[in-house]
Length: 177
Ligand code: IMP
Ligand code: MG
Image (spheres, rainbow, N blue to C red):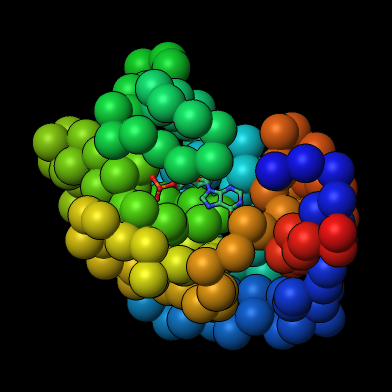
């Protein structure tokens, strides 16, 4: 991808805000009376996580995991690992994973299987965006923000080569050449 690609707004910050209100209502309905353990995937989910937790009127903890994949920058190659071991006990907890985009599914299927082995009381996934046409490995998304087209997405925490995370909207990189 070279410099003729420019970010074009796909989902506006107002649409994102409305979506977060909906997701937070769904999550609060399902987790009433429970303590929630949120596990947010760095770095892409940090903005989404920050906005979502401020809409959740529930007792909760937030932890972060950094995953690495061997392969290209644009997609995971199927070999994922945790950069650091988890810093929090999972066993018996109600765990909700927060991710930016589910693409091939390699990242999430790895993490959900990893966490399931730690025997949480429950384990669910909340993703801001889904690219279902790109899926290689099946992943169940319990709370989904948006289905997006098969384009490279940036903004609202999501990067292209570490850039564009600061854009307030979700944008697609479009060829302006
Ligand atoms: P998966 O393992 O292929 O599902 O990859 C998911 C990860 O790839 C996400 O957490 C993102 O970090 C990255 N990713 C997938 N699609 C995009 C995109 O369009 N823009 C930026 N990052 C992406
Ligand atoms: Mg990611």
